[in-house]
Image 1 (spheres, rainbow, N blue to C red):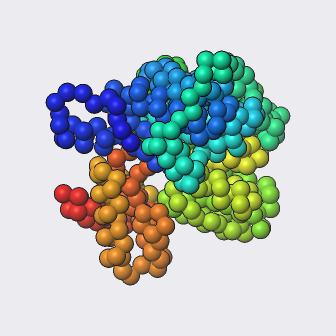
Image 2: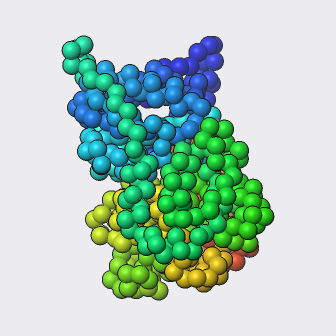
Image 3: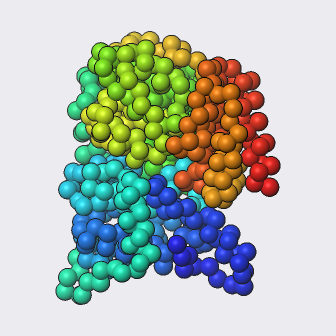
Length: 471
């Protein structure tokens, strides 16, 4: 895909550098603003998507990143030039925008957000009419349209405009409240510490918590896009929330990434329960309410065994699919899964919609805590115990995929080797997953074991081997 924005006498080295931070995948198109993500590129992507949708109706939302307006207006030009009607839902969480695609019966949608990437990044995520990401085949069709450049060109008298939609967050919250025991949650009057990383989830999270009768104890909840910490909701990045929850006497703490599709939990003592336990805890609760037996749960290859063990203990059937929300959502639809998601804190609950949603996670955790009556830390203590370590090695995607293929050929002594999504190697008491990221120019290495030492040993072994290969 062409850059359209590289300038100066950098030659092939500069071009290579610029292209290495332009990520094109099933998760959308991501780049660094002012380098690979330029107005000309964005406008052309808008033209491609407008042509792909045959001049249809498009919902567009964005997160709070400072570059959001530049990206949005560049995309608008391309969409409008192909005759699209744009429904602008403004600054909203990604799950809010995707729900509005279905609600407004649009032909597709674009969410402008680089999710957990650092502040200099921004991105376009493309969705179809059911509010689910474009899958691999649909994504290829869109990229073919982009590369061919044979775009629809509407004359002046067929151009349509931009309509502002202002009730998106209220619509989102109403659908979550409809599947919860609202009176039960309200009766507990929870004190909730909340860290939205100054992102797009501030408004909808505040609205949901108020409707559930919670006292909100906010930190980093100014939606100005100035991220107070690295956006990914991990232990290292959420020490402010842990301290805040402990000092304010909160019953629970919630943290989300800037576009609010991932949720991490902090206990009443300020302990980081983590993003991996979010799905395990929610799945356990939902399965217990449904009776468990015969239910189906869909998770990705990198999700903790805690979720898998919990589901199997409840008599549910577990399906693992490649990393990527679209893979999980499509498998959930096909199998009729009761609950699913990704271990990075992405809960998908079909009774609300087929998308990762931090607000759904918040609602279900609060209902679980209200019904159980015990502190969140005690509920979490009953989950299977594993230690997971995640790391990444900077690496161009093509080189990372080649390294993974070489390691797959060498895998020996494992109970199971799966190459459907990078390389996952399973033993009886541990596993490791290596894959080129769809969202960053890195190779992700994730290992899990019964002890922290075993997980660290796995990560260290494979990180060293990867570094030797890419050097």
